Image (cartoon, rainbow, N blue to C red; front, side, top):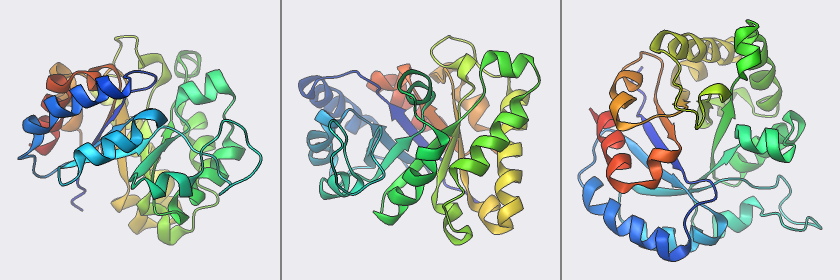
Length: 252
């Protein structure tokens, strides 16, 4: 089954609104003729409105980096899915390893967030992946099985294909280390098999991204893997030329 690749740039806690405007004006001419791939920037909350406005009519979609599962309530510092939807935000990153490790994001919370995002019309990018210790201890499959089963438990089988999963080996995020092609393909094929176990058609349609030190010089090799449907790009997404080059590799 043909799956349209998605290249999503996760800016993390970088770029003021002025810096974001400078970035988008440099990016848009580079991706104006992009064909055969979807492109998204996942930006800080303070940049969302400006980036939505500046990217209208372009191939660039705007995603948030987190959200609460409740539509409203006494949750100081949180942002809800309806708030994102009102800004015309297209999707949201959920369960990034930094959210899990640094801010205590739990699988229990993600099991609520993923269906809440879908119900609000947002595309959820669910991040999963193992630590270096888990990889070395041959616990990668156990970790991925737990995260996929727990985090997607609240998603009906009929809607599984609407989720995007990003496999990010934690040992390869911001370290310069990259999962070898065989390692990435093996893990992502395993994720696809897990989803197929619930619904075969969903498993075939589900887009699974690779995330972990993706750069212009390794993007083509990673994106050519049979089960890889795009990339969740960190550091390289902060530079418009590098990000556009990765997007071009996906469209090829």
